[in-house]
Length: 382
Image (cartoon, rainbow, N blue to C red; front, side):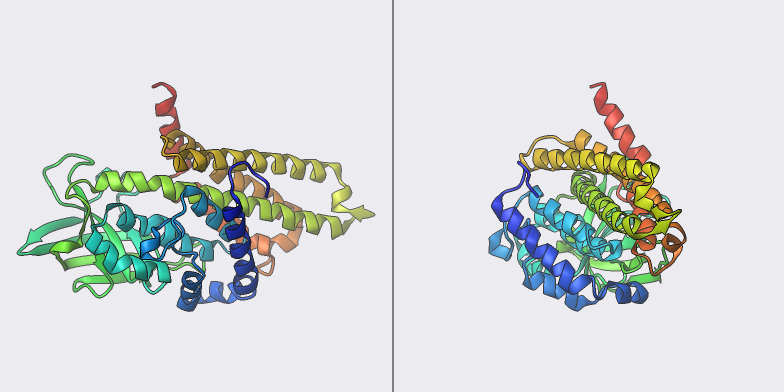
């Protein structure tokens, strides 16, 4: 892909990830969908290939790249047509473990980051609660000091990788008297922590090869060094990392949309109807052409927002635009592509049927379209 935003190094990375997806994911993805999770050996294999530490310093085993590296990874995983596989990996690399990399102490990084990069430790981030999602300030999970450590109580839901994660980064309120966003902290919680349990493995409409959990903390005992970053500053860490989360979700969306158009283009050029092929119908050709134009526009918006972030510039407005525009666009694309597949598009054997289900959450997870548009609107008048 020729672009002013990508270096030769990133182009090489893209080809490596694309080859991995072709050889290791496409032949096995259907089995993972049925199993409800991807095998740990696949995560480990990606660690061996260097895909899990793209953004992290070389001293921990990473590659030391910037936002554009994450973008390349997300785009190529999105191209796999298995959204559950893609999000399992991206939660680990770009939504959960960045909390450690950005805010952890050197001791915490030395303890966990090499294993995270190798794929020996799978991570998850636990922020969403039954009554608090994008409204992080409303969370109720509590962490109280107890002796030399902490006691954690509360519940989390819709947690990707929550069933199988070895290490979770959990948001909890540490100052009950503080209002709103104040008084929230982040904690590193290991899987075998007493008092922590997976209450339920949740069944979903899509992303079936990704495990999603409801978590419970009942007097879960944490050591003092489980605190990640500054006490009562966790809200800002969550908000900061939302940028990364929303960026990779936008990358997934545009790659999934482009792939769906390609699959549909092949189908309509071969499907016979009314004395010709579906491609002979002007309405279908023009609809696909317009969708292709919109996807290209979305991709350019995405790439510029990622480049701004890589330059260290404020890109909240642009990333929010990406999340809103790309999340809605991928669903518009999937609707049309499934429609043009006719009855076959409704069959489980059709990739487009799975892609329709997987894409729906991209306008919800990480910040619903309406929430993102409010973020844009606030910055239009300042």
